[in-house]
Image (tube, rainbow, N blue to C red; front, side, top):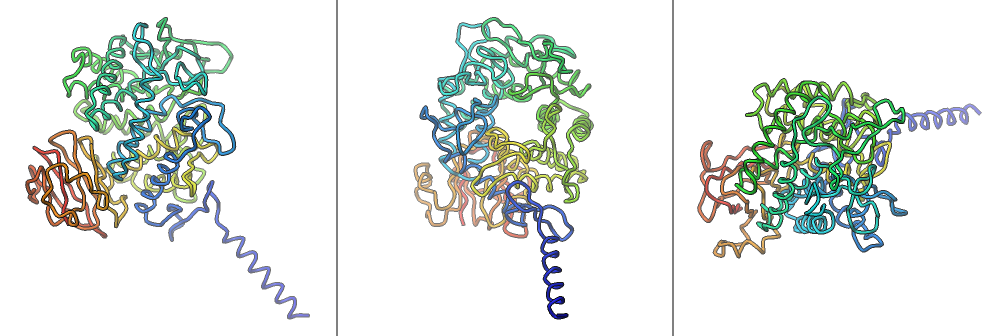
Length: 540
């Protein structure tokens, strides 16, 4: 009898211990931790290997998504993925621009030609099915929504209806068209970008605390700003659609066209200065960042607007003498309004989306992490580093084994989980190359746009570009850029035996044209500086 009770006692202890050891689930995966109990990625304890794997899953899910009943890929019609039925909502306002933004970086990172082909498809289709007429008051800008879901045509706004466009989203898309021109050198993309820039520049007005120089929403025919519900949800409608702060992409569009010496240069210079002055005078000073999202028809402060401008400040410090304090002020505001400590016991604070929807998000957490890592790199202040890594680790749990990517408390959004997700991991790797997968070869970043990237095993194209006499078995990587000068950071398994720039050897040095090699625990980081060449060949 005693033996039986003893065995029963032991089995209960084992059961209780198993329950105690059971790991908490975060959407699709049990939470993994290091020895200190801090969250690590679900796929692999090495963040670099996990991040590389995760963004590959996400891309593959997008690339293989089912076609809709009108023959288009599902993501061309809907903003939310549903495996059982087609979601009744149309696309997200910035869905296509976000995808182009991420895929441009991911193409250089992977060399996958399907990524480039997908960019061309999205841009070509949107340009031929989504622009306002050339004879209206706001011509040649894209509509952010398909009001008839299966029409294959984009003709309005999700909340405000037909004929309504969002100028900030037009600027984002036009910027990606400039990038696509730099990849393909197809002037049709550049011409379309110029037309959008011309429309935006021609409508810039003096802004104030209540109105941005360009409105958040506009009727392209009447030129009227639609009404949104007021801040207090009382049912009244006011003119809050006249304000947003998502103008960093438009400002970058103007700068890029000025550098290319294309379009109405005088208007772009004036427009850039007007937007810059207003951003400094009001949003940056008052921390009033305002709306971004297409599915909200009332006032909401958003993390994406604030941190997008924080990144613009860091990438254009010449315009911001006090850039460190400017960025710190924005980040402190974001931390105060959007920090989420639900997973604090795992050593991480994550980031919520917006004031009217305080939910932790994959895209917003990865954005916050990538931008804070850039601040760490530029400022030398490492206080934000650890949580940034933990936040990236946390955001990997949003991705299922098949590449579905969703919020913890919401659905798989084709904006947040795809175009507005992958780019943040790649930007994080640029700021902190140790987060790139060891034992893999990847172009992490370039100050130019990468037109072609052929990694070992996919080198059939390089022989047409003047390297016919090179032994293909010795080629590690070939790439070609748009600009003849630039800097690339490349994570490699092994230091190249030699590097050719436009058929001539580069030398290893610390200044001027050449390259540097930084040994890491596995392989290393190669930095190439080009001053007069576009084609680079790395030999084993």
